[in-house]
Length: 252
Image (cartoon, rainbow, N blue to C red):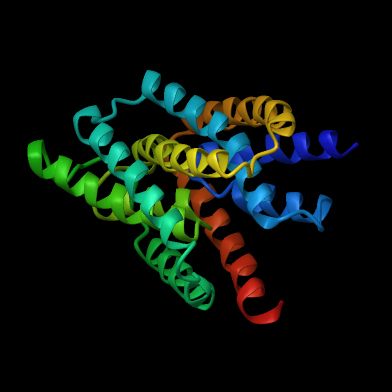
């Protein structure tokens, strides 16, 4: 029964995550609810092991329909991988607890800015090109990749927001790029959790397939309905993240 419940949760997480990120908002609480006595590292590792399938598939799907700047994004993905490893190592030395109360405030800022700038992300007009685009993409990959390894909640949405706000992408291109960067940062976490034996591989297989199916459905809708749809889902997911992270920080 646990496998069925977690597979359904993973499918829904893959659906949401493939559009704007935020799948962890669904899958991580589900894992903690179903397995309340299990070590948190095992649940977080299992989450990463399942969710990487969907993000990887979403990257492939977006790349077939949206022209992504691979020359900038591939080095940025490598930067995200390395930075995520560094963040994951640091969390073994320093507690990320101070971020718990700061995160809801950052998300409120992201939501307010997106709502006030009604044209934000509607037009694809990259601000940089050539080496400068590569450098800026690597800054995005490094900063959010490090955050993903060190703390994690909202990583996919932060990738999307920075690619829109800083790089000048529309929400559709930003979502495609975010999937690649998020796949890289997830792989780094999987490497670390695997080495420490914190992944339930017997759960990951079924959950990964379910996550992939959800991702295919979400990507199809995003590509079909375009930037306006992705923007609306982004606002919804960030709003949900604000509620969840505020509860975790101030009420739990």
